[in-house]
Length: 109
Image 1 (cartoon, helix red, strand yellow):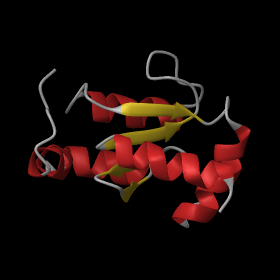
Image 2 (cartoon, one colour; image 1 turned 90 degrees about the horizontal axis):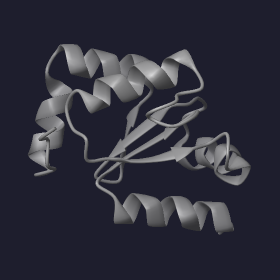
Image 3 (tube, one colour; image 1 turned 90 degrees about the vertical axis):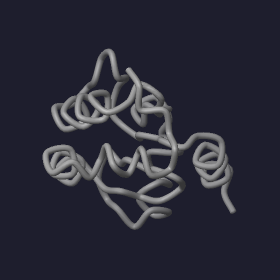
Image 4 (cartoon, one colour; image 1 turned 180 degrees about the vertical axis):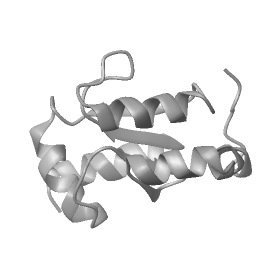
């Protein structure tokens, strides 16, 4: 197992919500990451992020590990939820907040 895969697994183990994105929540570097982190932030402020532009090993390893080719990628409770379109759809239909609440993740802002 590569070092990057070990780090990904550890990040997912240590954090209930992880978003792998381009840039940071305060300064997203692409429109998709911006939309995804805004949607997530409307449900909870309790999440961990990884800037894949600053970590090329994770940027290369994660698509192979997740079988999902693009960023952002949202993971909740060690499970891949999806990318920007799925995150937005789940926000609009209420599923994102329900999922966060299901795993007793603090959804307070």
